[in-house]
Every structure is written in C-alpha cells, then in structure tokens.
Amino acid sequence: MQANLNHITLSGNLCRDPKLEVLASGHVVCELQVACHYRARNPQTGQWQEHTDFIPVRAFAHQARTANDHRSEERRV
Image (cartoon, rainbow, N blue to C red; front, side, top):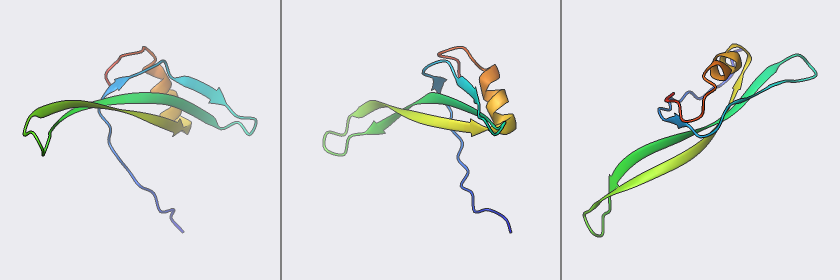
C-alpha cells in the first residue's frame, strides 16, 4: 500500500544553517528554515505590500544529506 503524501515546492533563502542529525535508529534528519518572499496587493488600499513567510522544513534520508550540503545561511534554495 502506498502512503498518502503531499508534495510542495518552496523557493527562498535559508534563514539559518541546516542542522543534520542522525537518530538512534540510524535514520538521518535535517532541519532547516526557508524564507519565502512575495508581494501581494492590499485589498483595502490597492497598494502592493512585501511579505515574507518563514517556513520550517524537515528532510529525511537522502534529501536530508542533500539539504545539508547547501549549508550556508542566506543561500537560495
């Protein structure tokens, strides 16, 4: 049986250096945070406003090691 997974694509900058951790079970986990910047029009004023969302990300296995390779803060991912 296949697991029900959701997939998203984020584009932004790393907020801090990724943290790679090897669990007692041997599984690899990488925690990082991505800042996604976007513009949106204010419906009340009609003016464009800048917004930034900070999204915590947790990657596992091969993706964790790949995420850790992009280890410099403020790097575009």
